Structures are given as structure tokens and as C-alpha cells.
Length: 512
Ligand SMILES: CC(=O)N[C@H]1[C@@H](OP(=O)(O)OP(=O)(O)OC[C@H]2O[C@@H](n3ccc(=O)[nH]c3=O)[C@H](O)[C@@H]2O)O[C@H](CO)[C@@H](O)[C@@H]1O
Ligand SMILES: C=C(OP(=O)(O)O)C(=O)O
Image (cartoon, rainbow, N blue to C red; front, side, top):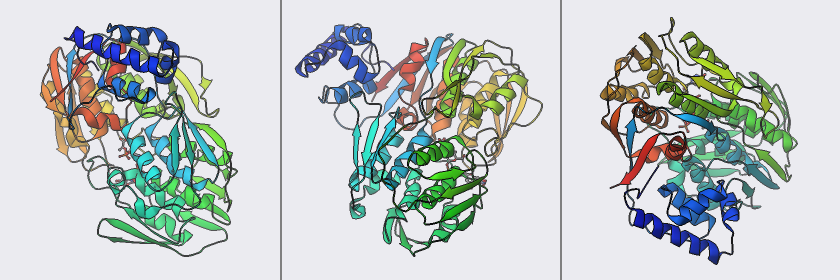
């Protein structure tokens, strides 16, 4: 994500500012590089004004140096200018997942001790939950390198002071219900928000939490919660095998006085991360990775623990897609293979050639990782429909990437998103770039390829994955494209454009 690249004198000025702020802090280039998760040579180039840097990077440097380097004026939207049709090359590392991070942040409320989450992705969704936590009195401190987050809960939460604005921007706020019901008798939470994907019900959460004594009435923008005491062994049957509803039930069970059996549980990646963390806190959980969990509740949880958030299968799929649609050879490192197997098998059926490294274990010591190298391939449409299923099926959040891949394949592909009423429609923006994508109804897309991509100017769809899909299609499209209002991408991806640039993509950021 480049800025200022036609203005070397501005780059030099920014470099000088950074050097003097660093020196004021008494830091070496290597120490600053470590805080930024980059190399000393990159810091050297930035200080020399010899490297284009993104506004995101300027913000991170400001944070690392505790200094405001540039005042940008009022809120302005960011846009990307993409010169597509270029081959990518090299390796790119998968970051830790948004969905596990938000669950773990909510679960940290269960712990009286210190929770240190390692390798947390620096994304807006995390910032929003952190803002909500700090507004109610939780101490949340980033480590100097900006990757680890230390969380300490106060004795008494100040729920009346909740940052309702941050809370309403995320659906994950719903996951405060599970931990809070063991801590408070009465509380109010702002309604859950999030991307524009159509209606997303919260009813399954209410049904799942009722056995724990939770009663919720919805009034004027808030869920008013009252909690009756409950103890003894419980069986909770989920009406939907949803991820966040499973997490809510697990978090309620973690401090419940008794053993809770949860049936129809999602065994998906973020649920597994949550269970691994709770195990460190002393909560025994049987059946991790299956649809029946037995959670042995512990009424007091007080432990100082560290947990490394596992790698994001959806980011892995996004990065693989960047390689596939540009016909490039790239390696996606640290891909959590257990959560990509159906996707890779489907891609094999479509003619994709790829190689896998030996498996190795993630920093959480549980998740299995591989490096995946995709090779330029002649793709064909698959024989069957591509549709998601709860894990171990094809991940619903990975489905949108198959639309742009199908557009590169010869033949017609039917993509069936039975889950969301409002996600498929955003993918029809691909037609602006030359793809033949027809919306058959709210849930089904017919995609006929191969596509002769051409550049276009498009406003970013108000949904995270479709927004990234359009960006990736722009990488495939020869000529110049503009993607307007891209801020939504930062909700779930850290410095995506910068990282694609490192693979050879030509992307510039500009603002109004
Ligand atoms: C923070 C987080 O972890 N978010 C993920 C989580 O959201 P989350 O768990 O909040 O997903 P929802 O509860 O919104 O479920 C998604 C949709 O699937 C439907 N549904 C789900 C399960 C089921 O067995 N039957 C059914 O019909 C729901 O009614 C809803 O319309 O799961 C979604 C579905 O995997 C993912 O897209 C989100 O990225
Ligand atoms: C739908 C998504 O997430 P959320 O549940 O945070 O809206 C997503 O990650 O694509």
C-alpha cells in the first residue's frame, strides 16, 4: 500500500521525522524494526526516504514510538489504485485469525489472572473488542513489538461505561454474554452489528444460554440480560452448529458449577482455539474438534497464562487465491491444513497444481501447519456445486474466493451460499471487471469462465470477504483499476495491500 510515491521529498521528510522520533526514544534501528515486526534494513530505507510506506505503516511506527508523526486531518476514506496483470512471486506468511482473536478476547473476561495472547493480528475487529474491554475497566496492553496483548480484568467491571459505538460495529460483542453471565446478575449489552451480509439471528445464542439461567429482553438498542442462578450438570443442544454460539455456550460452561455437555457444537478452528486457551486456564474439555463437548466448569478461574492465537484459514485461502488468479507461483506459509483440506481437494478437482511442505506445529502447539506452493495451472469448472458446510466442510468464509477462482476456470460453476442472504450479491461486482457472474437468486451464483479481465473503478462492497475478492480480481485484470473506500478490509486483514506489494503486486493507496 504505497503513499507519497510520486513525491520523494515527502518520503525523505517522513523518514527524517521517523529517525528523530526514534532517536528521541533512544532506540536503535534494529529495536524499532523488532517493534514493527520488520527488518533493520527496512527501517534504514524508510528513514532514508528510499521506501514507499503506507499510512498503516506510518500509524504503526507512530504507535511503536509513542509519537504522532503525521496529522492527517479529518476522517478520510482510503482507496486503492491497482495495476493488474502482473505475476506475483515469493512467500507470504499467514497471520493469526480474526475469529479466534475475538473469541479469546471475550474469553479473557473469565480469568481473574493475566492472559497474554501472542501473535494477535493488528486488525480493526480486534481494536473494536479491545476498545469495548478497556471501556468497562479491563487493562489491555500491547507489548512493545505490537504483537502480544496482555489482558487483566478488574474485580468489578464497569458495564455502564461500555463503548456502545465500538460494540455496535461488531457482531462479536454477542460473545460477551457467555462470560458475563457468570459474573453479573444483570447487565445490558448493545445490539451486535458487523458486515452487511443480510439478517443474522442471535436467537440460537439465547436458546443456548437459557439453561445457564440467562434471560434476555431486547429494548431500545440494548439486550437487557438477567441471570438466575443455575448449577449442576447440564445438557445444551444447539439449534444451529454456529461458531460464535458454540463459543458462547463453552464460555458459559467454563465457570458453571457442573459438567456441561454441548451437542451439535461447531468443531471449527476458532472454537478449537478457545478450548485450547480454556484448558490452560484449568477447564477440562472433552471432545475438542468434535460436535459433542463436555466442559468441566471451574467456578473460580485465576491463572496467568500465555496463548498463541492460531493461523487464519480464511487469510490462507485469500492469499492462495491471489496466486491462483494471477497465474503465479507463490508460497503461502503457515497454513492451518486441517481447515483447508476440502478447499484444496476442490481446487485439485479444478486442475490446480500445488505442493505441500511437511507438516509442522503452530505456536499454540496444537494446530498443524504446512507451507502451500501454488503453481500456474489451467483451471476447469468443477463437476458439482461449490457450497459451504459447517466444519469439516468447505468454510463459508472461504466460499467467496471460489467465485473469482471459478471466473478464471473454463466452464460454468454454480456457487451456492445457503448461509448468508446478502453476501452473494456483492460478488456480482466482478462483472465490472469482465467476469461472467450471474446472480440466480439471493443464494446462488453462476460463474462462467475463463474471464478476459479488464480494469475498472469499483466501490468496495460493504462486506469483508467480497471486498477482498474484488481486490484480488483487480490483481488479475490487466490495466488500472481503482477500489474505493477500502477501509473495511482492515477489519479482518493486517496490511493486506502492503503484503501483496511484497509479492510483486502494484498497488497504491490514495485518500480523498
Ligand atoms: C466472529 C466469528 O467467528 N464469525 C464467524 C462465525 O459467525 P457467527 O457464529 O456469528 O455466524 P452466524 O451465527 O451469523 O451464522 C452464520 C449464518 O449461518 C446460519 N447457520 C449457521 C450454522 C448452522 O448450523 N445453520 C445455520 O443456518 C445462521 O443462521 C446464520 O445466518 O461463523 C460464520 C459462519 O461460519 C462466519 O461467517 C463468521 O466469520
Ligand atoms: C462474516 C465474517 O465475520 P464476522 O462474523 O466477524 O462478521 C467474516 O469473517 O467473513
